[in-house]
Length: 177
Ligand SMILES: Cc1cc2nc3c(=O)[nH]c(=O)nc-3n(C[C@H](O)[C@H](O)[C@H](O)COP(=O)(O)OP(=O)(O)OC[C@H]3O[C@@H](n4cnc5c(N)ncnc54)[C@H](O)[C@@H]3O)c2cc1C
Image (tube, rainbow, N blue to C red; front, side, top):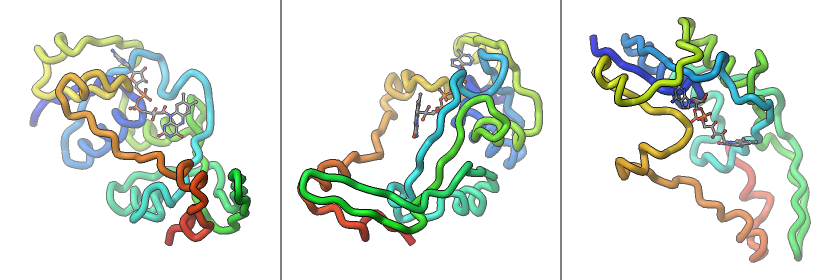
């Protein structure tokens, strides 16, 4: 079995660890802090239309990766105000999620699903880990390694503000499924 190390117990590192474990590999996850989650709690707002053609991200993650992500609330109402137009959309538009060290945060949910100890208080260096492990996954939140390896890709186009300005955004475009 290959020896795998993961730097960082953020969302990316934890999701990767869970997926590896599901495939029979138990990576060692190193985290420099003493608990998962960013120091300051905050909420992520996640609109379904941003992830088309996947309209229900929670169901998709459960069905595809057996990941349980619990939102703190549904988003059922959105009011948009543009220079020429204003409208209200009443529909199930997405979810809000908690981030941070709270027991209900995404990070805490993922750590619970990993269900084995994380190496906390470990500020590790990739060159040290490469001596000991066969594979290394850098999920330190910086993106520096992806850029260095030229595998960085921007996948989200922020076109909605422009659409609103040009007056072509309609309530229908904000619905999904
Ligand atoms: C206020 C705020 C709002 C945000 N809203 C959104 C949003 O709505 N949608 C969205 O997609 N993103 C949002 N983000 C960005 C979001 O934080 C990132 O998308 C997400 O956290 C990335 O997860 P990650 O696991 O890649 O990195 P991180 O969450 O940064 O996790 C990296 C982990 O690696 C650890 N680490 C770093 N270096 C080392 C090392 N050398 N050794 C050991 N451990 C190390 C860190 O302590 C950290 O726990 C927001 C950020 C903030 C601050």
